[in-house]
Image 1 (cartoon, rainbow, N blue to C red):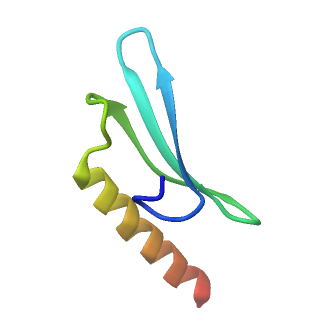
Image 2 (image 1 turned 120 degrees about the horizontal axis):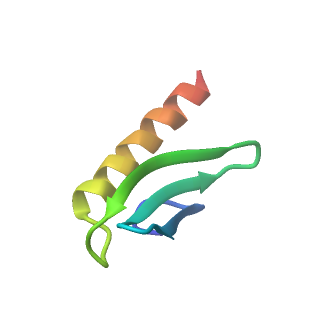
Length: 65
């Protein structure tokens, strides 16, 4: 998902009653689960994109310390 950042992907999982959206990033040493939400629209909501970007920025800053 280039709209969120490099190496970021979305996994869509259909369930009996609803579908799920899992956003994750693959780093060389870890897979970071950034967000999980029920999928209600075909497009990724803008608020979710912004939340994922903020979480990854915070994660990257914490790893630099």
